Length: 238
Image (cartoon, rainbow, N blue to C red; front, top):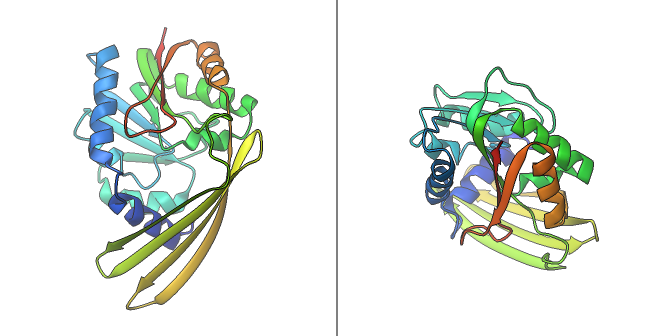
């Protein structure tokens, strides 16, 4: 669970990180939805984080909402999204009072479902929030054969007078990956701070994703836009 300061650092880092374009991703996702449901008017962003996709979805759909497990992330998102309903909840099991034309779950958050039963539970929950003919878009995490074992990444960005560096190391544990992330943040007021995190994400086979969609009553296809290495699973509720 993110603390408030870490959530703010995360938000600033990914907004400025080279190669991450939330506006372009949101526009592409909206186009994918309308290809399948031209009359789409509403969207729910699940595991919405600090709201960086939702900031752009508000220009694509008449009505948008978000749901996120971390209250710290929501505390960052709320000032950016006045008038948008943001809910705290677990993507594996939540119930809202309406259905949507589209549901999205981005940035490989689906990997946190931990095991195949959790994956199926989550996809079923997301599907229950779709209108008939509605579209579900889930950004996958790597499959077991695709993950680069012992992969190291590192980036530094500057936001105002704050400099943020992120270094990560990811190992393949067979049915899951373990990513160790270290943040170093420096600004004039607080000096230099260091935060370490560890994330475990399940490594599902493509067939496991597809089975989860089909069991939830969705058609499914896998596409690989240039901006997403693991790709997207796109489903339409029958």
